[in-house]
Image (cartoon, rainbow, N blue to C red; front, side, top):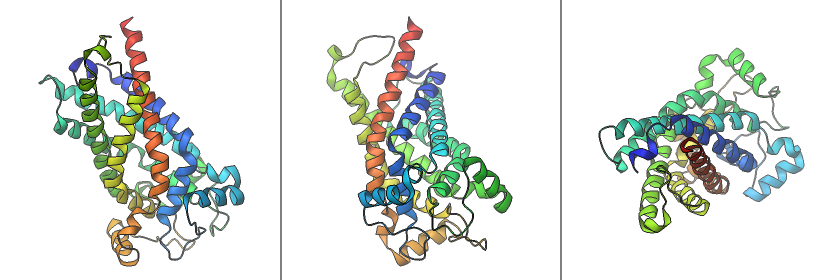
Length: 310
């Protein structure tokens, strides 16, 4: 990727990323609820219903909890996704710009480093939002403790009953997830994108101040392919994080103490399969959602660049 594409576009990257995150959540949230519930269903004691498949889970939640159940945790999901994507693209663009000061273009290693750096910073900012989202998504009519009334009530209750540190439960697998997932996804995206631009040759590119005019179908395919590769490798981190972020029982007991405890218990009682619970819903949610994210991101970014050039 050329220096002209990345230098001095930090705020445009943030704006495009935030728009992409908002579009992604609005499209896919019910599948996110299903995925989270599958992730924490370890086959032992649980306050959650037993779901057989993703369609059956969607139908059951809609029938027993209504639209509110399908969109549980929607506000922190929107806030978290918008902030995460905005910050991610911002930090990613900053890192790439820094590396480009001393070279003409970035290779896979520096794309990897840029994405890993952005992922770690985003995780530190957003972990409390994801914890609240997970807690709200796991609330059902079977819940044995007073349900959270909403996002703000959840935040206040968590800090009052569990302390500030509770907002960072799951931060360790969250960091591994953000760093590795983002690094794999963005490295794959950048490399596939570079090869596609090269393959299309000069007659499919026009010089609009560094804006490479691929179309939305290209961005959709690139986003889906890069997301799938990252998901397969990093999904176990999502399961570990979700299990750590469950609400304590009525007597304050945590189901899992730390990441190592989750790892041991999951291997012991469920085997490798336990680390991929909910992956079908996750793929249905995130593969097309990633396509939408990159379509929105690239088109908003190109629009902002063209407007600034004009």
